[in-house]
Length: 575
Image (cartoon, rainbow, N blue to C red; front, side, top):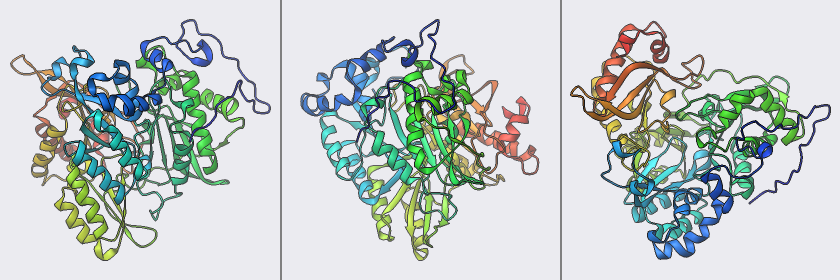
């Protein structure tokens, strides 16, 4: 379903003063100020032919004639609009990542991202994903920290059949990648948690049904990330999204949403800011649409590394952003509203919890998000054997099984353990996530999944006697782009080449310490600190984490979190 977007001029709010856009001295590619003439190759190909249009060529030409028939601009550009990236050719080491051209790095296979808005799945849908993994992706499957599932080793010849299977059960890959509105994160316990303020599912459904696949929003300056939660744990990492809605109770207007804009990590991290506005549930889709169009019309397009919404917000500030939203895009003023209170519980939903209807939900973690087609098929069977047909993915690479009768909970937990999903994980397993890494990603410098898995299994033994009050978050990333959110972890590891004791360049990680987002054990969200020269070899994760965790346990003050300690500790203690 698409929407029209035909406004020719700003719609004034009564009494508001409209400021006419002024041309900048150096054009930034802002459509509403500089015009729409493309200023780089990416903008040229997007204007020449919209990314959504490539689907027909995939189905009619490329799937028939094979990889060699794919137009290079489609392959390296428009394919992303349908969740497809070429994956890394095996055997190319990280030292060559920045020196080779895309066609030299890529294999003739694809990563395919299945879009799962709100993380909501049925066992029927899960079984279809498992079948696709087994039939077309060599059994691969990764749970991402944006609630999607990624498959690998996909051939272009098989993509139409994959789409047919997904769409038959209400799933798709539309705008799973590209300069478009990506998946909308949602609370994994939406509609079932006893303590939620509001079920955000209707708001997520309205956004996705109205605007995903809309050609008017299919050429944004860069990716556009969204999140909506009604749960007091604030379980959607809202501070690092372009736009996010966090449930809050207004003293006069009731339950609605607090709006955040302009968050993002990568090489230039920036936490989102509150607009100070309270949004009623029925206003959410319109406000989301307004923010997306601000990004489309005013976002910087000249330089790709400055094209995220966070750079516009940094220049404008929250007050001006809200003014433009209200005057030019909504046509009315939003109510002022309070900030949501600090979370009182973890937002990963791991463990056993009672639902509002008396049934239970069970949150379980794989190791660093790596699962497989056979495991997903077994999971679907297991859930149905225990009387349920619903599950959720989370922004923390976890799975949540819903609607479990109380007398079946322990049996489910044992079954989850048997397929590598722990509902009672160690704190280190619970807190560790990893991006795709050099195994499949063309941007990566270092391996992540295998290194992190080995570290988790090792640390479960090494830290067995160490007293930790909360999960120790260890985020492992294969490059500086922070898909695994390294700057917001207790211990963030950024992949890079480092120099070993013999003067050789080897795979390793730069260390970030003490980052974190909204949390029950943290006063304020903040980014991690770096210690000059502190780097860890790729095979040394367990050694470093053991050393710094034991030092924290030894030196911390009563009630002090790892992040608090890491920011006050001297550099010697952190090495």
